[in-house]
Length: 273
Image 1: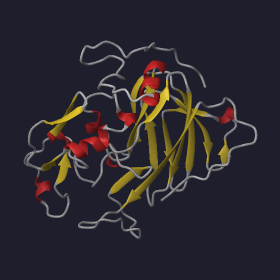
Image 2 (image 1 turned 180 degrees about the horizontal axis):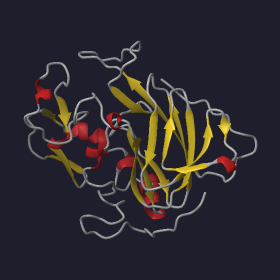
Image 3 (image 1 turned 30 degrees about the vertical axis):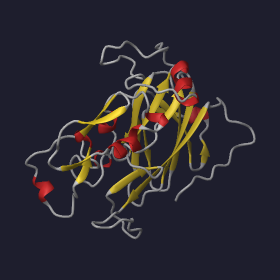
Image 4 (image 1 turned 180 degrees about the vertical axis):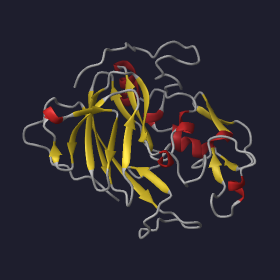
């Protein structure tokens, strides 16, 4: 278990943030037939944010117009992680050494976090929708170091890699299940994957923070991945302060299913931090 030890300043840094998140990246070596990581291994095959691999990572939910800080901490054994946020430009405002003077802030949407380093970034959540946040090393966007597994997200045929005993094991494939409203239903068989069960799907979709996301969002979130959700005030309050069910696609600004724009959405201009 890894937790951050954060000492807040006596005088609050300005501009003041409305929301403050911490993401700890780690690598684990889980060998064939093992149920616990090999803590002595320098190599790895699973990557996590706050102890979870996508799509089991919890989305970071914020309100449209808020100033948001994300503190990235790299507790991996071997690799750096260039952390990339879609839909927004952030400013790099701090390191493991403390706050960076604002005259030296760097605008970016990608920040490299080396082993045992931390990087603080801040941005204005002015672009509504659900935006992926991930490591931009391509082989860190999956687990098992094998194509399209962890879990399998689409049907794969005639791939000799799946004939190798041990790795990859037959894993539970998301291509066999889909959501209809608030329920998971079968979508067909995948000969290379075990069927996802209702219980499996509920682990992913029943978390309050995931409700209202695009249909099938979990098929594209894997490995060192999470999602930043920027919601209009009405939808944010409904999601975070009530128990009302929120149907899929509620937070998609331009709904692909023709149900109109996100409730309460107004496109705002870019704001300089």
